[in-house]
Length: 247
Image (cartoon, rainbow, N blue to C red; front, side, top):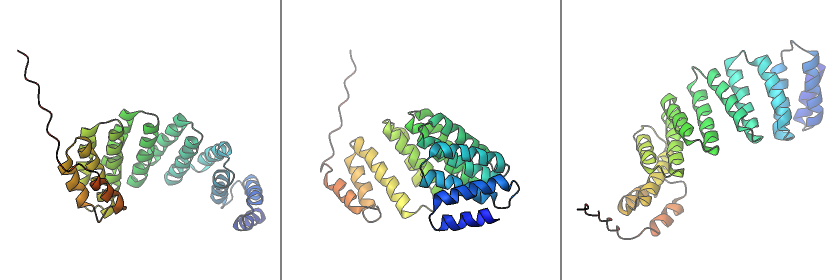
């Protein structure tokens, strides 16, 4: 136990290189040690947050998964961290592969399922795969067990549709979000603000104004709402006349 105690002491004092060596030695000489999970956790933490050595983090996390992956909760945590590391390395296919393994280990845990799907959707969006973004976020909303989690999935879905000018789908997602009960004031305000964006894009300035005025005191930054209201046209534009049918 001398190595693990020395490693803890070095880690607590910020001597991370010394701690790293002792944690590594502990793993080598204590194949059945009770503190192996602690050693793996500290080594991966040092690799990622202290040294920024993501390639080493991949090796550590994959080895950690082989040893501790029999426990679904631990397996999910390891694979989720591995997915984040691959994303940092710019290896999106391997990141997606890691998060897909997360989904397998998230069965029966709505919080893990929600977090994994939300993270995967953001990766798909970075990749420009908006069909996968939509399907993943729809599944995310369906599987979420709490209103706030479901709302987050629907908000991300609406945002993603707005990025590709899918205004109708974005509005539908936000309207579904706003029907949820038990939402926090901030979540409600953020959704209303995005919905106002959509109505403004459609040049329905009256409805835009109504929505923005409804969140003047609840939006996280009221000055942004005030600025938006101040820049709205005073009058509703004339509807674009329809062309008469050709004779």
